[in-house]
Image 1: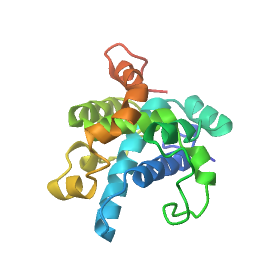
Image 2: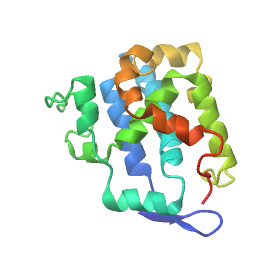
Image 3: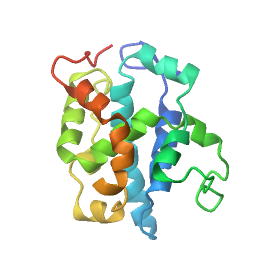
Image 4: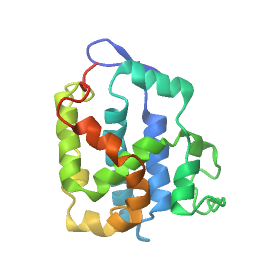
Amino acid sequence: MLTSNSDGSVFADLSPLIASTAQWLTCSYPSGDSPMDRVLSEVQARQAVTVAAWLRYPTPLDAELVVLAGPRGSARLDWATGADGGVYGPETDPAGGQAWRTWVDEVVASWAACLLTDSQLAESAIAALAEGSQMGGVPVGFRRLAAPGDRDRKAAALLRHPDLLAPIAELHREGLLARLAPGSAPLTA
């Protein structure tokens, strides 16, 4: 899906990639049983994935290419977490099927895992986005990602656990650090 931003340029809608990758994270690292815990965990996952996706696909062309070609899917992530045996059934898969898993982006999930487990890295990533054009002048807050409260941390205890997310975070951590390094490719179109 193509949409236009405030300056009239057209860019690909990354929402299917963001939604699927956030869903993979929340299915793989579930929250507590209360509805509020599930919502708070999902919000944190979605914020981390959004920041990671905007960093990974910084230009309209980058975004359009991933929408046309499709991301890698969740197979390697499933293997890294030990869930590669098809353990996602209707009870753990809110969509009741597996098609959403083809829209999971491995690099974005890895970068999001890095951001969820390192507040300073999350703040650096958000600051880098603020300097770029992804936010399109619209104030976007990522408070639950960068400065989670006690309730947020409790709700997403597994999702933010550094040891549990290490296999995912380590897949592409170096790429994220390189992306955020001074002198890296500009974040503007």
